[in-house]
Length: 304
Ligand SMILES: Nc1ncnc2c1ncn2[C@@H]1O[C@H](COP(=O)(O)OP(=O)(O)O)[C@@H](O)[C@H]1O
Ligand SMILES: [Mg+2]
Image (tube, rainbow, N blue to C red; front, top):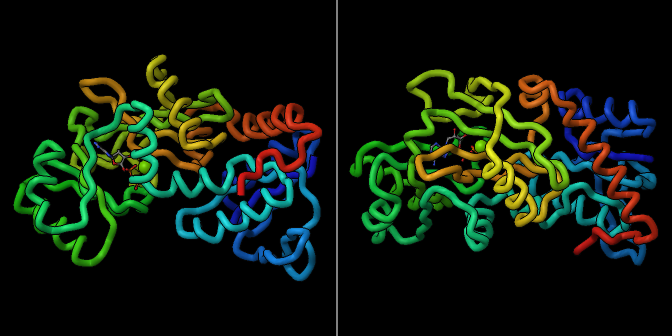
């Protein structure tokens, strides 16, 4: 197969592992810089151009769309869908996952457990919003934050009121969320490929003063056994958002596992190193299986 990996940088661990896994399985993989793709959306035959010429035909694409380029990245993936290329994650699902509020709304509608979460526009409702989220301590999160930046823990009502007011005043989209204290600075990342959790790691914040377990914030990853409930939750969440490859983040609370986030381009480095699992290989195998069952149905993944 000819596989394209949409990624800004070929030297990233995730990117080169995907190339390596594809090559090992007898395929050919190219790394295509998402932001250097350009497209003619008006022609009868949709195309993508890259570095001065038309992009060659690929059987499958693995989108690795960083948070800061979601809009353009989703447009490139959409164009590939229109061209009938099999995209591991489709553009609509990538866009859904990027917005924390939107994905939590979709998950809650299907009964997936999550911390109590509120969203508001008017500053008048702030006291009630704080009460709704169970009072302090609580978390304030940017809807499009990532790597732990834009997640604020506030411990007094006074601080909560002024921080929420400040963000609303700056027209930053935020949500207010119950803080799950008993998770003690840890969460569980389930890496889902197709309808399987292929690896899971526990991430622990680097110190007792830090509540965010993000590896970019110095969190430490170890392999972890997940419960059946967590496994089912991760697979269902992936399906509800419409992804095939996802990193599902779960906090362990006194009332069971709760979802905090769905990532459409989860990193491979932390999880492969912590668990020893061949996650890149699982993604390539998933493409092989999907292409087999998709044979003769060109463009069947494209949803426009
Ligand atoms: N409701 C919560 N209760 C306790 N800890 C949380 C909660 N939400 C997030 N965290 C911690 O903060 C980290 C970052 O939050 P997250 O919503 O995943 O933002 P980001 O998209 O920036 O990673 C999580 O990995 C987790 O360790
Ligand atoms: Mg996160």
